[in-house]
Length: 290
Ligand SMILES: NC(=O)c1ccc[n+]([C@@H]2O[C@H](COP(=O)([O-])OP(=O)(O)OC[C@H]3O[C@@H](n4cnc5c(N)ncnc54)[C@H](OP(=O)(O)O)[C@@H]3O)[C@@H](O)[C@H]2O)c1
Image 1: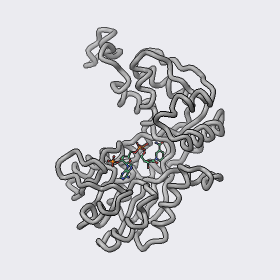
Image 2: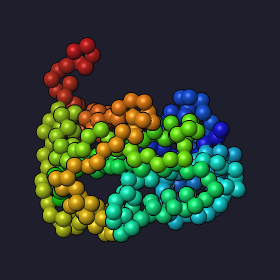
Image 3: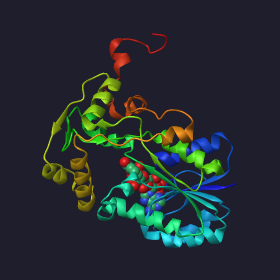
């Protein structure tokens, strides 16, 4: 079995590649910008990159890129691929999915795969815990995080759980060919998440509530307006409304989904600057046996 892992620079693909390597499972990494030896160029919006990436692959871990999906399916079938595991999104399940550009793009990829001869497994994550990395800039600078909806709930899921779920469906044919909705174990507001981050960092993490218009203007340089609008709409609907949770991560991995508190501890260094050595150093503890 050889597996093509697309989106190799992404957090989920990197964790998945480590799992496959640790268990000696043959795989190839594909990325828009191959930056490690052995990684091939695979830009899912550029069909010219598909033949080399797909040569010899029997399974694919696929990021959802709608623009090249028709060509990708044709090339994959011709190359002898049998199974595709798509990193989709639970946004496709929302009642107004067709009107939301993020959800609609994932839906288009799902539909093309499901209409193809390729066996398709759909992983539909809720909100990635890694979205919190967007707060690293202000936190490192000691500034409050600016949030339009601090009370909006999400279901943050750890990238390690997504990678382990992908590993399970790629390596166990009995789990393939289905759709899984992958959430974290708790519905948490953004304010809850910042409080858990503060606990992991050993210092309070302040936030400021801003209007949707202020937030849109502040992110305009790096989030396209249609996506910013879709996020605002999503957070407004989730304000004070707990997210629906599933146990699909534990069904696939055999153990409970990791909490956001665990994610915060795993990523605490991403939120510290050089002058902030962390709570153990601040209290004089060594962290070993104390
Ligand atoms: N963030 C969330 O809360 C969330 C929730 C549900 C679903 N998702 C989906 O999960 C995926 C990753 O999201 P993210 O927020 O972690 O990261 P992101 O910054 O949106 O995307 C980074 C990842 O996408 C890959 N990628 C993007 N365009 C590509 C293309 N044209 N061809 C091949 N790979 C491409 C990148 O791979 P290379 O740079 O290596 O090419 C990288 O692995 C997206 O499809 C997103 O819609 C995200």
